[in-house]
Image (tube, rainbow, N blue to C red; front, side, top):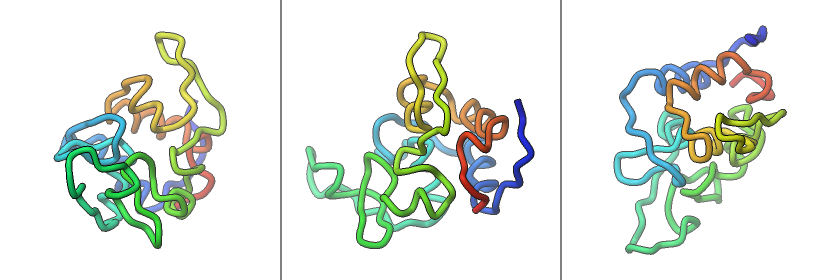
Length: 138
């Protein structure tokens, strides 16, 4: 069900990037080499600084995308999600849904990692359910 919602410039750019096929999809990290979680693509487009891991086995809070004093590669830096109109660092959904295997999908991170939705499928879900994803245009 499509809702009346006007996407902001960064949100539109993000959806178009997810649909473009330009980004390789990864899982469980915002960025791993050249592969991204759907939320990592958003960080890349927002030009958040990325600090690569110093060594194999680095903790996810020691490297990743930076926003203010926060750095993370597991989820969005804390305040960044709210800045772009998302609910929390995982892109929480206002209402969850069940994937085809019956798993609960509670966030955009879950869309990427639990439901194994492709980037175009995630973009289509966001376009059809923007108020379940965003709190505001950004």
